[in-house]
Structure formats: C-alpha cells, structure tokens
Image (cartoon, rainbow, N blue to C red; front, side):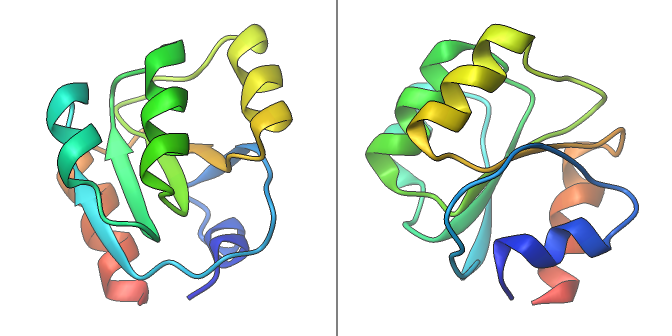
Length: 107
C-alpha cells in the first residue's frame, strides 16, 4: 500500500502530502520517547500527539506518514512545517485502534 492510497479511504483527510512511499505496517503510540525508539521505518504512525515534536520523531524514525486520530489536527503552522519536511499527515475522527485497524486491513 502506498501513502497516497490513504486518500481513497473516506475516513482520512490529507493535511500534508509527501513523496510517494510504501506503508509497511502500522504503529500506535502517544508517548514520543517510545515512538522515537520503536516506530518502524515505513510504518503509518497513528497518534493523538499534535505538536512539533511529533514531526521531529516522524522525521527521525522515517515513518511513511502520521495519522492524527480522535479528531486531532495540526494547526496551520505545523501543517506548513510538515510540508517543508516532506512528511505526509492525515487526520481522522476515528479512535486510534479503529484507524490503525483500517490501515492494517488495507495493507
């Protein structure tokens, strides 16, 4: 599954696009220090943490994209920063588990 394939799922809204990459799995974590050490490269990271440190961890771990769950979204400054960094970011109203399950079932 490609990151752009998430655009075909009506539950997800694209906030920031990136270079095309493959999603190789799903990772759920809201504690940034754990995500920094354990988020697999190429994963779709589902979280409710919507701050600049989330972008830093995504860049460091080389996740395929960030999915902000539970109706959480970046403000316009963070969306611009995600675009600058080339990090794909989606938002959804789904709970974390349901969002992760939807992506996993689409792999």
